[in-house]
Amino acid sequence: MKVNEIFYSLQGEGHYTGTPAIFIRFAMCNLRCSFCDTDFNSFTEMSEEEIVEKAKSYPANHVVITGGEPTLQITASLIDKLHKAGKYVQIETNGTNKLPEGCMIDWVTCSPKYKAVKLDHIDELKVVFEGNGQDMSQYATLQASEYRLQPCDTQDAEKNKEILKQTIDFILNNPIWKLSLQTHKILNVR
Image (spheres, rainbow, N blue to C red):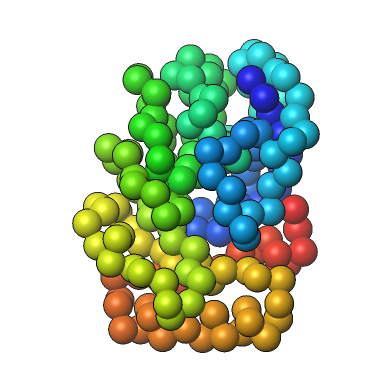
């Protein structure tokens, strides 16, 4: 498996914000979003056993499988091995692929990016909001336990301020949504 990095930090966004978590970031993605902050070109080849051993070296039980796009590489056997190691497994996916057959993920966070969502189950729908011109109607039919709207980080303070205001206004007018901030960036933690 092509692993970009495995590290230990706090979950910075969404439902589990503030939770100590082991992040397993896979390389490769089927999309190229302009605001993505992941280096897809560097990776280390790791076996499932090596991934699980590295995850076991950290004290937390919460694992976040992210990417890139993790559904391009994860397997049911990797998830089973993580569960056998006592880990609770969350995935962050763009939703463009179904989860592999038999893949028993504990919490599915789907952050769709302009493509059809093919997931059968979503716990948390997290949309990166780029501002008032964004078509939000495409998410109206997606069923999830929680709906989160996250202001896009453009790396431009003034533009980010305006997007944040528009995000808050949208949520106030559409109260099914909750605000998700990238607290790891605010706190300057990895």
